[in-house]
Length: 580
Image (cartoon, rainbow, N blue to C red; front, side, top):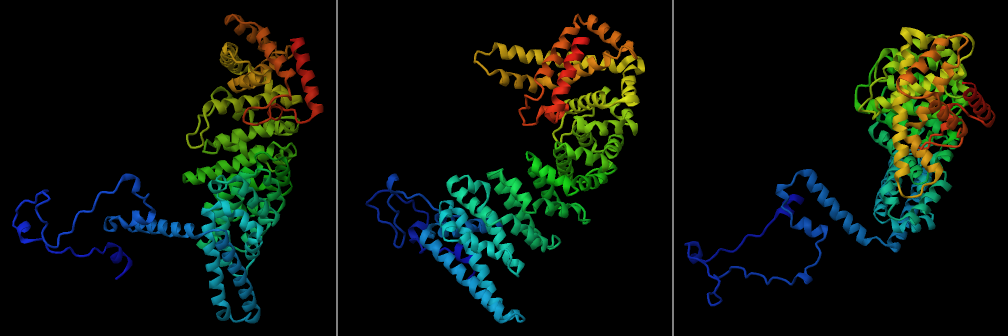
């Protein structure tokens, strides 16, 4: 009799009396005896006496015949986990770890004794693997993590990451991944902190990187090992973001770049590597600098070049492409990487992507915004003009690209990126290139002047509405907090727009018609130049003092990357306003 038959077995009921078979009605009268052999009805228990059903009772009361094979396995697994969890305590955990240590020693001894005869140490290796598998139950009781740490359980597990048999190391990785699951860590943060500290002390990232180097992602079991290794790092950095820098110092960034460079094409490992790299670069200048020193900018550009003429085939591949763009944009926030972007022909590639109108178009526009900003973006701005990039950017200035549902990017966000690119061109271009940028505003009967003024009124009304809402609120709000709320409402983009207006309208010696058109439109809308001057003056006075609510430094996106250039640009803006 197999397991299913055993669980479905029901004893045969005794035959009921002939009187009942013939159809005579049963009565509830106590004087009427029950037919011989009929089971008596059990007394209904008092509600308070009813025990809470466990997984075991639920399984016993389940009609297994009506369940699918997967549902049966799941219920049986619940029963197994419950029985294991009930049995696990501090004493039993110490016993399990002691057994693990003995099996490690036995396996090492057998391997040394019979190095050329695997059959001799195979049994000890199976026993060692079983001992590792038994420890999975610890993940269900995070309150015992301190026992695992205090009796050197972590060091035992870490020693197995370099085991000659990759199956053993993969089993340990699976266990550690389960132990560091974010949901498990948040159940008991104090115990989780002990575990993370112990893993960091053992330099687990370095051990994982060494182990991943010998795993082949074309083998399913080893690919799972790589995936779980990356998951461990993600779990640890999510619980403690400061570990991002240490992880890269231990070789993780090099390992991720190596995995991404493989020519095996897109797969789930590439997706996970790009996602983890994006996390590592998000808020850490040390990692951005390291990426540049490892030629990471060039590698990212090579990977993205494929999407110049090809669209991603699946949603996972689209996410992979977006992750690569995010990595590139994050790395460009480190000023020195903008020069590396230029040497890698980044402006040329982004310009081609904008022309091709593929799925990579929005990412290319976003990347150019980061690459052209600040003093370090001057050469990229000059390059864009040299490669006839104005013919690509200014049509987008008139009509920004539509958003993408898959990436969550909107047309309004693309509009802001284009405005930022134009502001960088106006600020950073010099000589003949500067004149070529200004001439663009006179083409087609000053249509781009009309467009910049349209944007001014659009964003001015939006910011004014936000300012009115802030004033009407009763609660007292910090001045800086109120300014940040106005920035989120579009003030930063309005500042860039008005900066462009003042720059192009101040070129009266060469192109006086631009100033005349600006004043004409202001008069038509019953507005004055003072509103524009006030916005630019506020922009200059707050330069370098504010950050967007999402953590992106405004001084990065408007061009000031150090104190000297920040002060000089601030003074330049104030002088420009006074002269206007």
